[in-house]
Image 1 (cartoon, one colour):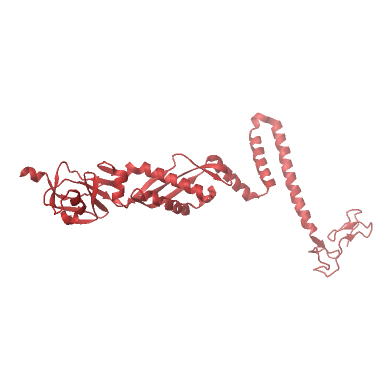
Image 2 (image 1 turned 45 degrees about the vertical axis):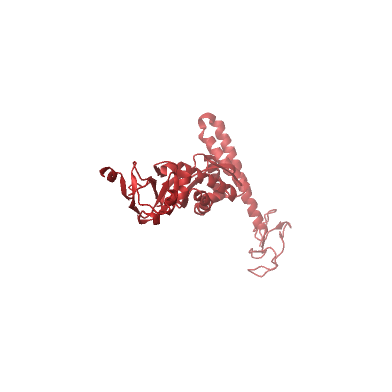
Length: 346
C-alpha cells in the first residue's frame, strides 16, 4: 500500500516562478493520477491533458475534481464508456496565457526598398513587441513537440523573423517614401501589426503590441537628407545649390594650404569673387525689375503704381519718362540731375 500511495497523484497544480515560461509539463515520473484528484488551474493558465500524444481535455482557470464528467474526451480515448474509478496515466501541460512583454526585434540584415526621392535604399529598424497564447491546442500542435518546457527564448528568433518579414512586405505594399515612414512610426506600427495578426493566429498566438522604435538610413542617405535640409533653408533654386556647394569646396581648398600654397589661395579668391559677383548681379537685377514696376512723379518724385496717370502725393500728371530741359535726355522723375549733361532738375 505504501508503494501505491507514493505513486498516486492526488493534486496537480503549477506555480510559475519565472517570467518567461510559456509551457510547463507536469513531471509525472512514472506516477499515475488517482480518480477524483484535484486539479488547480490559476488565472492566466490553461491545463491540457494528453493521452498517448493526442490532445484530450482542456481546462481553464478554476479547481476541478478529475472524474468522468469533466474528462469526457480522455474517457472516450481510454475506452471507458461507463466511467472509471481506477488510476490512469496522462501527460499534463500547463500553458501560460499571460502577456509576454518587452520582446525585442530588429533587422539583422537591411530591408531593401525603392524610394521615389533617393532611389533604391536599405533601411534598418528595431523595436519591441508583446504576445500571448490565445489557443493552447493550436500552440501545442504547432510549436511544442515533445519538449518538457517552452520559454520565450525558444521562440524569439522565429517570431522575430516573422515580424521583420511582415514589416518588409508592408513597406513594399505601402509605396510611400522612407521619410514618411520614419516620421510616422506610430501609424506604421499599427498597419504592420494588422498584417501580423493572421501569422500569429496560425501559431495559436496573439500579437498584443508592436512598436517600431526607430527606422534608420544608410550614412550616405542621411548626409543627403542633411544637405537637402540645408539647401531648403537657403533656397530651393538651383543657383543657390551651386553656390552652396562651391562655398564648401572653396573652404576645403583654403584649409588645405599646405599642399597648394599661394596658387590655391589665389584660386580661392578668384572663385569667391565670382560667387559674390554673381550674387550682386542677381540682387541688382531683382532691384532693377522692382524699379521698372514703379513710376516716379516728375514734380515731387513720389513713387506711383506703374499704371497710374496722376501722382498719389501731389496729384500732378505723370509722364512715362521725363526730359532734361537743357539737353532733352530722358530721365526718371526721381532723378535730381540729368545723367547726360548734369543739369539740375526740378
